[in-house]
Length: 246
Ligand code: SAH
Image 1: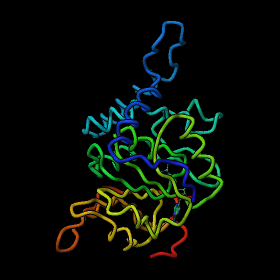
Image 2 (image 1 turned 30 degrees about the vertical axis):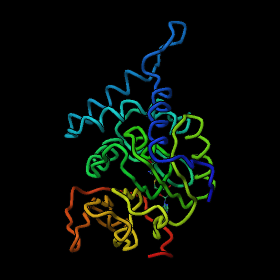
Image 3 (image 1 turned 90 degrees about the horizontal axis):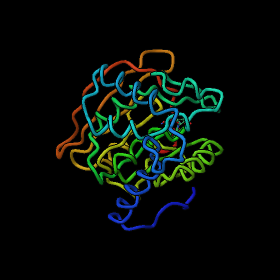
Image 4 (image 1 turned 180 degrees about the horizontal axis):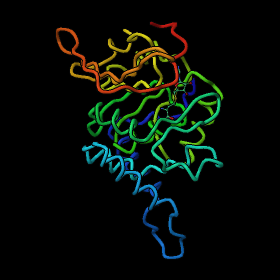
C-alpha cells in the first residue's frame, strides 16, 4: 500500500482537486506562446460521439472533455487514444472503452464531493475522470508494478486521490461508506464486502459474468432494508482476480 497521497481535510482536498484539474487542463493555452493542444479536437469529437450514443449527464461529458486520455495509453497507441474503443495498457490489461467509462460514471451518479471507490485502477483513466468530477476518490489495483506506474502518472498529471495496492474484493473498509463503488474488472458474483461498504442509497456499478461467457453491467443500490438492482447492457471486461476478501 502506498500512503503517499493525501491527509488533507475533505473540503480542502476537494478545493485542491479543482485547482489541480484546472491546471492539468490543456484545452486552452494560458499564454500565447504555448503550443495549441493537438489532442483537443479529437478529444472533443470523441465526447460528441459518446453523447450521440446516449450519455446525457453533462457533468460526466464535461469531465471527460478535460481528461487527456492519450496520457493513459502507451505512446505507440496515442493515435488511437480518442477512438471509442478499449486499448492494451500492458500487464495483459486494458483501458476501458470511453463510452463504457461514461456509462459507468453516469450510472454511479457522482455528486461533487462524493466519496467513490474504484476497484481496478489500471491505467488510471477512470480514476482521473472521477477526480475531474470533484469526487473524493479511492482506487485499488492488484498488479503492483501497474499500480506504481499509474501512481507516478497521476501524480505527474496533478490528479489527487487515494491509491492502494491490493485485492479489491475486500474493498477499503477504513474509508467506507462510499456513495458509489465502480468495479472495472468482472467477478462472477457480487463481492458482498463491497455491498456492505456502500452508504444508504449508494450505488455499486459492476460488470458481472464469466470471461468467455456473457457479462453484463449491473447497478446495485443499497437501501435501508436491502438492495435493488438493475442490468444496463452487455459488456466485456478483464476478469477480476484475487478473491481473498469475499
Ligand atoms: N479502470 C481501469 C480499467 C483497468 S482494467 C482504467 O481506467 O484503465 C481492470 C483492472 O482491474 C486491471 O488493471 C486489473 O489488474 C485490475 N484488477 C483485477 N482484479 C482485481 C482485484 N481483485 N483487485 C484490484 N484490482 C483488480
